[in-house]
Image (cartoon, rainbow, N blue to C red; front, top):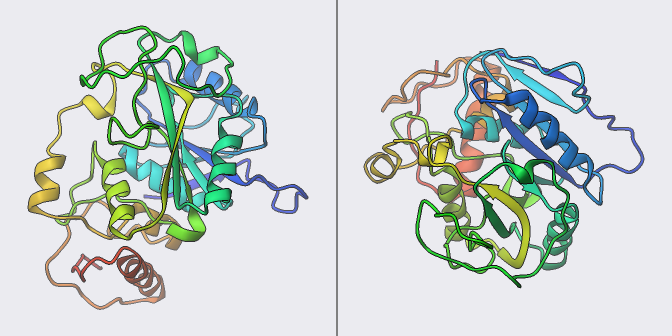
Length: 310
């Protein structure tokens, strides 16, 4: 495993963006380039500058017209490995995920970051209008209140005019589709594996939110519609078959994150099952990786857990 980076931001620029918005560009995504183009346009239309960060996998390359920062990993990634890479590669204080088929209101990043700064929150989320077609992909729209919206708890969602996710009100129990979090408070870490080394496939965001709650970090909901979320049970990761709920109960969570590999450059353990007996680090790279792992165990208040080390 290795990765290469392109169109890196100018760190000497006077007015640096406050927020990185990252996106996993999955190599098997249907209509990938069409979605990518409108996704980038959505980020460029934000009322304050944002730092885009596109994560390609399986050796995919960005099209010539993408003038945003992007990174290509040589092997396939899960969605949460890609998110962990986005967190690791963010050069701003705040990070936010935004899926290929979701879109933000033009002033969403401004509203979320303002709320995060004012409340000193570790994480901020809002509400989302649920869309069942793709008309929203190229639309521009502002943050709005709840007028004309409704909440129905059925999951997967069923087509209904003005249906919102319920993440801003807490009715759904989630904090997004997409959320914004403070990397200075949380650190550059994102859950990617269970205790036995199997990858998280569907509930990584829920695990992340639960960890923050367990640490009693401040999490704030905005009762505003900040974006539009595309729902298609036949095509999206959150609806695909998985064993995540069983694995989190039986195996627990590994504190080894793909973000640590990106930060340290040590991918030697990638794709290998975690061991019960941990070997001592053998070189400086492995020592750095082990130190990052120990740091995030302490941050998230998790017990020591043996992981494989070459």
